[in-house]
Image (cartoon, rainbow, N blue to C red; front, side):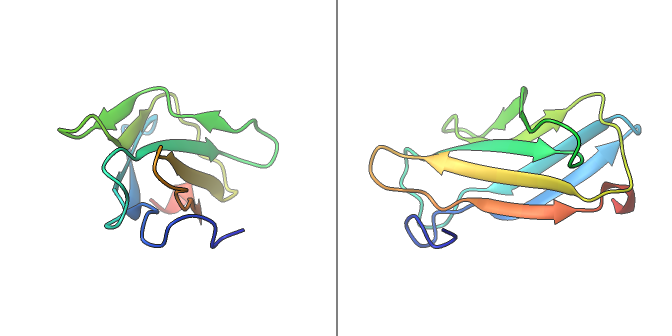
Length: 106
């Protein structure tokens, strides 16, 4: 369910930028009410025909929290790509964030 998890714990300000055609950098900010130990994980699916992939190269903040990802060898299709960021904390359930993005428009 969309409302599962602590209110205000989902990431904010998610955005992706594509560099040199094949590199994609996605960043976000931790939810303003997320517990300090919350760690986020990004998954994306380029098209319905492809497998969902977890980020392999996370960008971390000063607290070692994942706040971004660098994807290499990105292929841009005409379908919307699906992005999902979920989180975990020992203290509470964390809301997930998801979005469909037209990569060819970035």
